[in-house]
Length: 179
Ligand SMILES: [Zn+2]
Image (tube, rainbow, N blue to C red; front, side, top):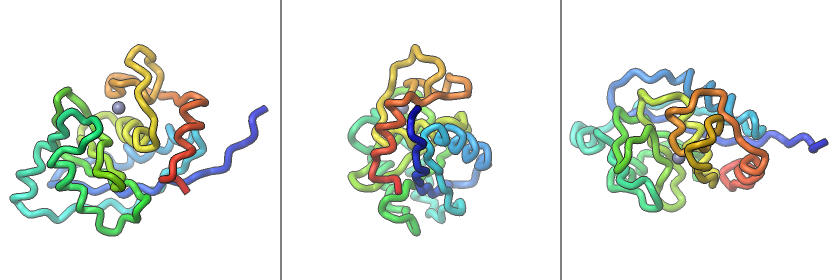
């Protein structure tokens, strides 16, 4: 039998851009339920409503993430400076009204080097946050045919419960973002 894994912790700060209704509690419970498979406790700091100027709000809506590959977009670089009280290993999740890219998507985990962050649309499915956080913990997509997997490339279409495999769990638990 496998040895029990010790609980590791990931600190996450949710920051909201603009005035919008976000089902924060649903997002938090979906995230914790999925990460519990890996014995990772996701600890959420108090949610912050970002205080941005009208110019910034207009620049950032929609949040254009381009190809959402290696390089962060101008919008992502701009928003990445609003970490406020987050520590260097903490992940900041910016909740936007609309996330726009070359393909349709609910979130994106591309970020400037050494600045762990996620952007996510307020009205996407709750499991998008866990999917994007798993990218930050170095997991890749498993394609789009495996319909029960968190790392399905179109996780927005996959109904819960979403599964992590043993090897994905092993990989993500090695991340230096965890303590
Ligand atoms: Zn993805």
